[in-house]
Length: 259
Image 1: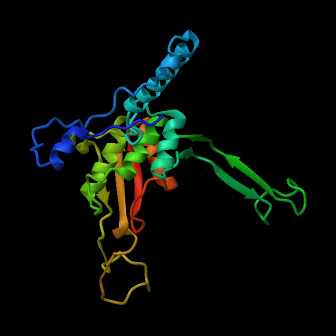
Image 2: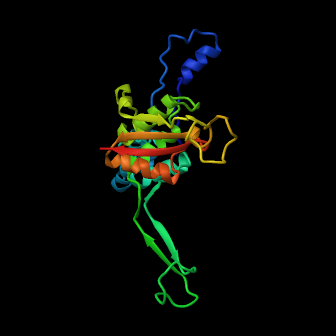
Image 3: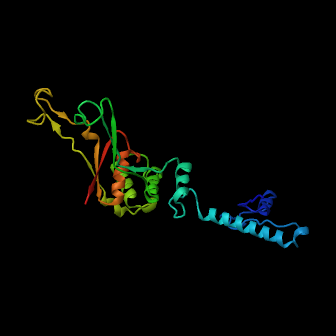
């Protein structure tokens, strides 16, 4: 069974081909709401069992159509996109898998002088894991998707660009956009460069005598992000440290949670 929806009715197309003015003709550009129902051939129309089967088939097909109409797969912020369906949309449509919030740390013991004497078998190695790991919730996953997919700020990195992205992640529930009022809650600080060369700013014998050097190394590429303490902010800090949020790799970012 083939279902077709014409944005322009065939009669209108025929009039346009024949030279008739079709500009005032109604054009249907909406979503298909009711499908073209299946039906029995006339010779079987008096069979109650077959008619019940066709009615059930039409009701089932209409249910599928209603679901697809109410569930726009590309709009992941919709409340109807959740759970495994959100995973399918995020990874299948946009190529972004659900992140894992991990605080795991692995410690290896066995090398010389790493454990107390006679506490580990000779020539053996021991690995210990500490911390937790869990998949991000639907809410956090949608915020991560918005972090990567929202293009309203442009593609050029700046402090204002970063402030908007961080505020949208922290305060935009389920990846939705936010008013500009929330931007003031995010503080960005760039480490002051300063100068070296004056007494006693530089260690002895590390700089030419009577010279001054501006610090343009690591300090020039460090930005501190200060945000209010919350569960979402803690998740944001974890995701940024784990590399789940795309940011310029030339800059070192540090998140400070302020209570």
